[in-house]
Amino acid sequence: MISHKKLKRVELVRTLVLETLHTIEKTSKNEEALFNLFGVSSLASLLAIRREQNSEIAAIAGLLHDFYFYKTGIKYFPGLNSADSVRPILRSTQIFTNEELNVILRSIFYQNDKHQVHGPYEEIIKDAILIQMYVQNPEESFFLILR
Image (cartoon, rainbow, N blue to C red):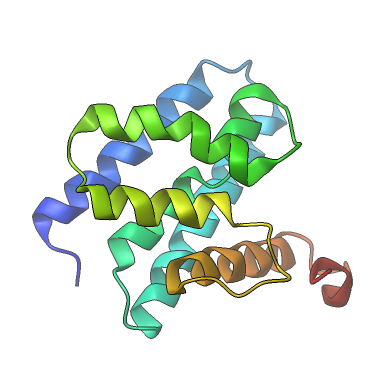
């Protein structure tokens, strides 16, 4: 169960994401962003509980995994760019330890590195993204997504 204090951290990050999305022109991209970011966040939280990891940290990494793409529209190097763009935002909140920041940023950074196994949170984010992709587009072949 997530404590009241921890729930506030997740809510703070959700608010930051929503504020950023509201600055973007209102289009179907906003809906897609909300569905994707909040979906990956929820799935990551559930996977973390199942794998006995911190569900709050996984939820936050899921919320921020594609932050750069939805902020800029640039889809190249999503892990690197998103991790780089959220680092100063997370640091400025001063609500995360250095270890928590490291876990969140590594999870975002390695989200597309499917050819290598990383730590538990990196794998949670990778799996949450794949599940979200399947849920969002069930008609696509799941094996194509795994590549």
